[in-house]
Image 1 (cartoon, helix red, strand yellow):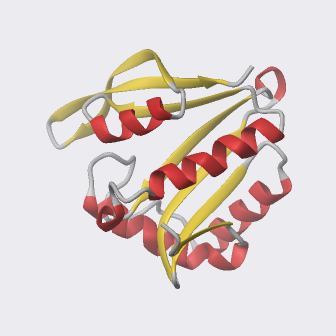
Image 2 (image 1 turned 90 degrees about the horizontal axis):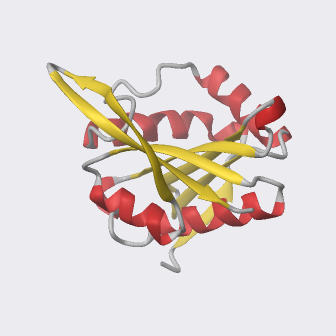
Length: 168
């Protein structure tokens, strides 16, 4: 994996990130969006990345293979009485599944959380996404609950697991 570079996203990366989301959205039904992407403008994404960069409890990492964006991971800190917690999301190009990109991204994210006062990281994952669940468990995440019918794709309902990493 020496050809993968992990770096914090910058507002200049907004357009590339939005295109990446359209690609990964078309490759899987594991994400909250499909080939349409996340449905925001380049300027909105750039503003989001700026807010994340300014928030010590949030981070957005990109995995680059040369000039190609092959994965992203982000963690968003929560406010007020939940400020010890953050929620995370990850995406990796299908061509890079099972090549260590997800582990590299997770490693950076968990290290960031440990050094920035995040005590709990939460995520939701399709209950049938065995590869993702295995990745999360490898980093210490535990299933803490379930959400029935979290997705509806066509006429099919998809249940999700809630997983948490306790860093206390």
